[in-house]
Amino acid sequence: MDLIFASLGLIILLLAGDSLVRGAVNLSLRLGVPAMIVSLTIVAFGTSAPELLISIGAILEDVPGLAMGNVVGSNTANILLVLGVPALMAGLSTKTCDSRKSYFQMIAATALFIVLALGGEIAWPQGLVLLAALALILGSAFKEAMRHRCAIKAGLEEECDDDEDVEGADPDMPWWKVIMFLLLGLIGLPLGAELLVDASENIARHFGVSETVIGLTLVALGTSLPELATTVMAALRKQADVALGNVIGSNMFNLLAIIGIASLVGPIPVEPGILQFDLWVMLGASLLLVPFVFFKWHMGRVWGILLTGLYMAYVLMVLGHA
Image 1: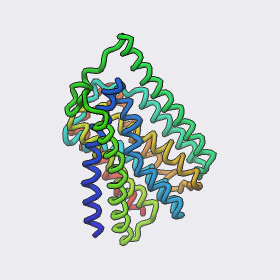
Image 2 (image 1 turned 30 degrees about the vertical axis):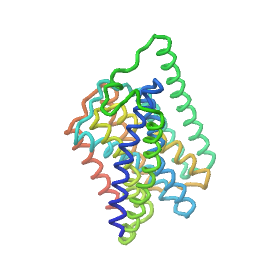
Image 3 (image 1 turned 90 degrees about the vertical axis):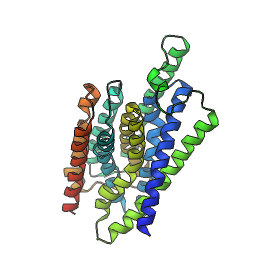
């Protein structure tokens, strides 16, 4: 039965990911907001919902190691696997993507998280710091979106042709249809992830794996599948801005919102193994995006193989030290 539930969860994730991308892209067209801004907010929050549900549940069930492992493992998977698989399948052209500002914010969020984690525990004071940083980032994103809309109305800027030419995008899509796509995605993603993660946990427990290792591997992989589904669909539609923005935004949400909110429920200890190894792997994976963000390198199949291979090696190392 666990295998059946896992398969069902995966199918729901793929369909919900497609629905969320359609809704987000068309919402950006209707509001005159660039797809990157929407992917950094609506898409990122929707695909991070499984991590939030898992982390809060883990603290309430007195297994906080699962919450920390889930977020750190998910962020590593987001860079190496969620971008690696689409690059392997269809490639990602980042020539027209300007994600430098959001990337700086993600690196800053990662550095802040690591500094706070070095204390050995993230409790409510540290959580409030993380949430304050998130508020600053969201405030900046919305100000940028409003400036863009005002510039369009004043005739100083034109709507992005790249957004309008995107496959599946319809500037005349009715509001009810846009909302329906968004709701189907936002509801389906956590539902599918919960089915898949629960089944994966049941399977893993038969092998006597610790909660933290489960969080870093199976749960992290399961909760990263919404990002993977969304990014694969975006790559197939040649929406590199949505794909890259989804990963960057999700990583910021994971560190600032997920851990920030979860720490208000209860303190989250940071185990020595995570401090000594996993946090630095997460940072290193994030720095691998520098050539694509600043030098507009094409993320082709060779990079897809490299990123995916690095993730597989990371999982094997974690399991090997379990």
